[in-house]
Length: 256
Image (tube, rainbow, N blue to C red; front, side):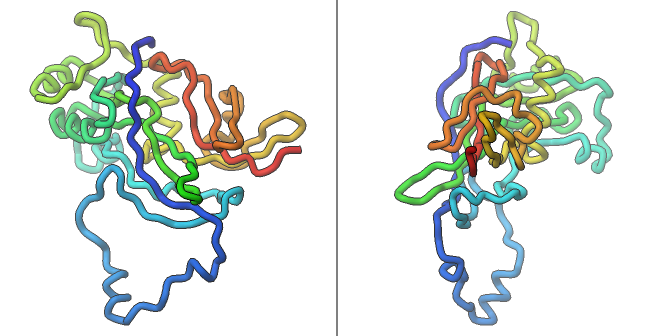
């Protein structure tokens, strides 16, 4: 699938920096305040909002991503609500204004409705960036300006998207709407997991061979074309949306 790629990222962040463990322990809170902190919080979070926690660079542990998940409608959720999805679902690409991927995914999902969409999200990835002396874990959009959606009736989806006052265009030529290949659809739907965020991976280089010990790149080393150890990223050859290479977070802890 070949199209021009917009160029603008969106990101949110958490700070990671070396620190003594004792310094990370919060001061004891009054009983009433402690009880308040245990209560669940209501309300939503912005695209850029996230919690902060600290780790020592080079010691990135295997973990589940704590970032807020993107707004998506999945088949399991629809089944729980009693919505029947078509047996045959195709994957397509919605072009939006770069930087508005998350908000437009939410708007499209609301406009089209769960009876037609089984998924609608931008694919994001985690990486570490050093800012003001601290390593900050941020998320960036892997394909800026694009949202992926799955539906069994793309023509009906197109008609409902025409009601949007914001720019949102299904990729295609004339009346034909492009579909992702099975390989492209598998990459988009599976690589980021349930939250559609490709987490950090951790690995080593042994005798010139990269071995990923944990994270989404484990078992996918054949996709890696280049590693930048200083920036803690790997460049993958996926050939999707005219982006010959995309980057994801990879921490190399040892090289022998």
